[in-house]
Length: 153
Image: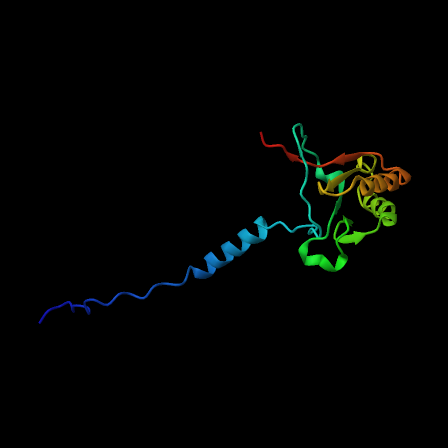
C-alpha cells in the first residue's frame, strides 16, 4: 500500500478570482482620473481657416465665440450662420451680456487679461463677425483673437 495517493490526473485547478476586484477598481480609478469632461459641445459647423503663423494661447482667461451654420443635428435652427457662446445659441444683441458674465466668473487677477477667441467658420460672412465685434466694443472687451488651424505646406 502506498503512502501517497495520486491525484486525479488531467483536472485543472480552479482559476482564482481573488484579484479581479482589485483590477476592476484600478481600471475604474484610471478612467476617473484620465477622463476630461468637455465644457461645451459644438452645435454649428466649424471649419477654421488656415494660417501660416499661429501662436498657442492660454485658455484660463479666454472665452470662445463660435460662428457658423448650424450642424446637421441642429437643422431646426435654420441654415443662416448663428453665434454659439458656451453651450447655447445666442443672438448678436446677447453677446455683450454673455461676455461680461463670462468675464465676471474669472478671478480678479485674470479679469484685466480677459480675451475673446473667435472660432468662425470659413464660409461665414464677415458682416456677422463685424456685428459681434461692435458688441464687444460696447462691452469694452477689446482683446480679441481669431483662431485658425495651421496651414499645411
